[in-house]
Image (cartoon, rainbow, N blue to C red; front, side, top):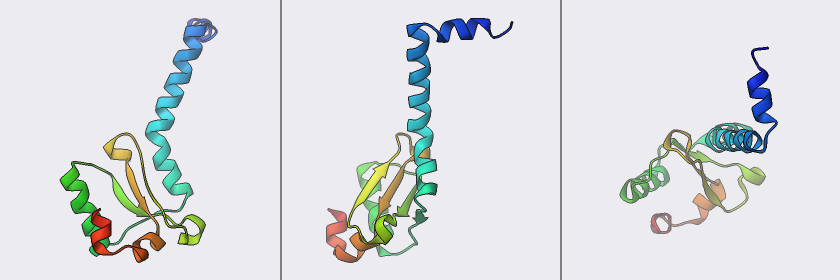
Amino acid sequence: MPFEWPARFLATAGGEITYFLIFLFTVAILGPVMIQKFWRCKPLESNEHRTRIENLCRKAGIAYADILYWPIFGGKMITAGVMGLIQKFRYILVTPSLLRLLEPEEIDA
């Protein structure tokens, strides 16, 4: 059988660890793409908030794929987050309530 070697390898401790690490790596890289879809995040429109966040990220040297509205609990929760290990799949999440609450200078902080 052509698949005998992989089956034997995966039956060993080293094979199980390798399989688990490949699985974790895949989830860590592709997870943010799936999560932002499941959470129904939408791109933050071009406005003062987005411009301030973009400028802050540029100054800090942080690369990201997009800045998204995070509608957790209907957008009523006051929070923000970053998910993703690599630039192509890294997202900055902000809730509408947080953006309404913060003054422009506080966003810079």
